[in-house]
Length: 370
Ligand code: OSB
Ligand code: MG
Image 1 (cartoon, rainbow, N blue to C red):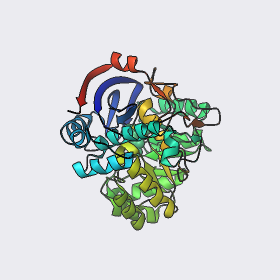
Image 2 (cartoon, rainbow, N blue to C red):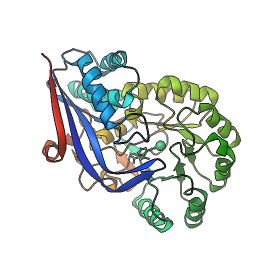
Image 3 (cartoon, helix red, strand yellow):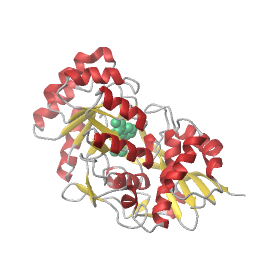
């Protein structure tokens, strides 16, 4: 592929309802999209949020790093594969993996389209459908939460994940478990707790959760290992797994029994595949998380989730769970068996609604090779 032209387009898309995690809430997503043009067009989406409450990266830092360091490193150059482009991005800047992933994933889409294969196949996927779960944000009250659990379980989602934090954990789980004793339930703290609260977390064992996601801070691999040693419930790491190297450390320390892979968090598909393989070798199942992506990021996530060690339902929910109208056609739908089909068209396998993008764009910048 020859990178002749790169477009950064920032669009605004309103969620059907605000999404609250332990560290903050979002209603309007400011989504930074990347388009890579050669003879065909590859699409990527930056998962960084408006605020640095999940990661140090935001849509603003990603834009700066893309414009100043990453785009100049690849514009006008020729690459034999998306993997080769990924290596060039790694050489251009340390960290800033959400910024890198947006470009890297667009390159995988372009690579797959130029080879005329579905992205899932190029990544090493072996399935044509992936099991779907749903992640429910912190609600104003318990009744609102119970109503949403009921609705999503009724739609067929294979597991329900609840966001938890101080004051929205044991009391809420008591009510949920009383009402839904059989539900496959998980919780995600988004690093809300301090390692000093170990006993508080050990008490969550009684709720028969399928996992507890990221109770402690990103850097707390040892604290997670200590908690996991005393907990029957598996710990799943999300924020902590920033790279294959960090994942290997977490596996070695036994900080978790499950890993959440988000390609947008770890620098893209090449790093995701390495993490997937490390976990497979350690017999640790993985699942594909989400960052409230539009259909573009969702298409990438679903393609990645078709790899064999993605053994648990992902946060790859249907388009209508997030938006009134998605950026791609067809929109992603939950099938009656609780799965989402992996698109079988070339590349990401869905059409991007460029007219709609223009209608909701805040800004667009085009970079051309000189
Ligand atoms: O921790 O998985 C997370 C959303 C924003 C930031 C972090 C997370 C989430 C989710 C939603 O849980 C997943 C999704 O439906 O995209
Ligand atoms: Mg998470």
